[in-house]
Image (cartoon, rainbow, N blue to C red):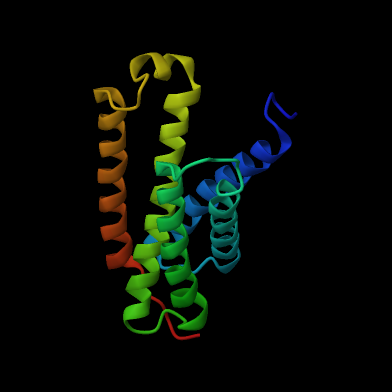
Length: 161
């Protein structure tokens, strides 16, 4: 147990937080036109590992978290192909930016959901996760990410390597 969590849960949470932090660094790079290769590798790797480890928790039926994890792995696969195999050439630049931002959004979406489940004050405001405070929070996060993604697509230009 680490911080009251089983070790596996702690590793999953750390991977998720590193993925979110490095994802915001990568997003900044997109806004200023910098590839930030090391940060990008860290972001994509930890975000893939976050999704994969999410499937390793015991479960008896398919849950919404599994749906988010599945979508995340699909967009991450596209981002990885666009970034590393297609070198962001042509339309692959836009595909990379959009899928990287979606992957970051999904990580933040889950973070907000977990905060509402684990933080007592938030849990009291939205005990089932379907109350207005939770829904408004998620809508605000989505709106912010839509705007950030549009800005990133418009601003991220790459020079040939």
